[in-house]
Image (cartoon, rainbow, N blue to C red; front, top):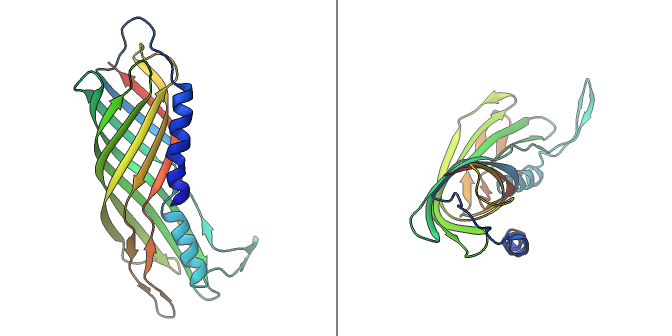
Amino acid sequence: MKKLLLLPICFFSFCLLKAQTNETGVTRDNWFASFVTGYSIGGPKASFNNALNDQYYNLPESSFFGTINYPITGYKMPVLFMAGKKISKYGSLYVVAGQSNGGKAQGYNGTNSISFDYSVLQFTFGYQLSFPNTHFKVGLGPGLLVFKNNPSLNYQSVASQSSTVPAATINARVPFGPEKKLFGIELFFQLNIAPSVKMNEIVGETSVFQTTTINMSSAIIGIAFAFRG
């Protein structure tokens, strides 16, 4: 969590250094719509990895292709859609929706194989503040994170799980170049702060995967492909 809190400090410092003075002319900033992708930091991935290790689903498995070392954790790139409307000289309202985190985790305990295919959906409503004589923008708002998990035990699907928690979201955007064109590319940062969720116990004929806590706080560093008007 401390590493996540350091991220916005470093990012804001970088943005302020990179912020450019507005050139003369009309700036397109009455509305915007963005497609965002990038790299997620934090979130459920480390929780799954720790749980698989703690519950001894970390043994090697021999296969036709050689030895497989567990646990294995995969990653899904975030996909977010962001749209906003200017309501004052330096203020805008915006919404964000999409998948902010996701991945797969697999483990083996010598007898049983277990896997989790999970995603975190985000819904945020916030207020964005622009700074005079710069392109730097920062937003803050409440929202919801929906954790969806589809586990399987010995390659057989078991009951899916879903949990919803409130979240506080901070994001920042810095366009590459003046905002005079309909289309632009922006550097994007987002931090979601949310309480953890509990994943249900999974019971099989010869195995039990105990209830575990899943971290829901995460950050995204990426690129936004923006349309402005």
